Image (cartoon, rainbow, N blue to C red; front, side, top):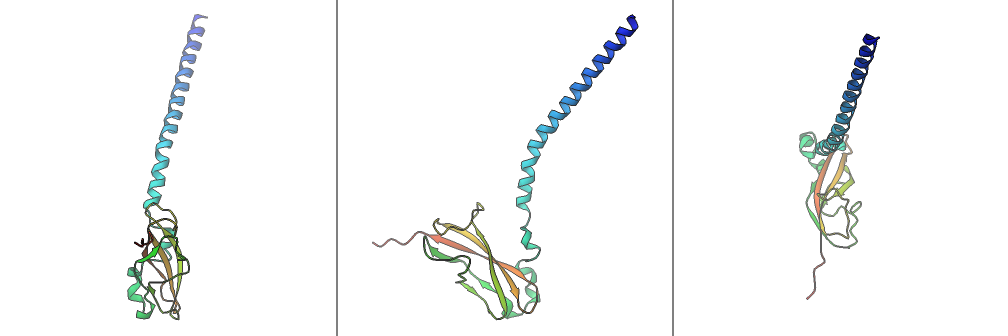
Length: 153
């Protein structure tokens, strides 16, 4: 009988150790997942935008385009709270409307916040360009600078 008690006591100790080890491993996995999750989010931000696969930058396809299929963009300044419509106003962008279709995609500031005509700052506006000739499509971008209204004085 003594032998039987020693064996069951040893099994209980072994079961307790296994439970502790499993518990420790589960805790470690929980802690590690908390650290790894934000790292995945930061890595995703560093990758190029998804649309860049379909619409590469002008520089990458320029040699495959004719001169009248190249859109010329420059930075554009607007007044705070003006009637500027970022999605439809292509002021400051030069292109042949019979040769290319230009479509606004997005405008965001450095913090990733969408264009707001009521908030002064610099916004990067991205436009997709599709040549009518079926030559490669591409994207162009420019800064839209929203400035305070000039004070009369």
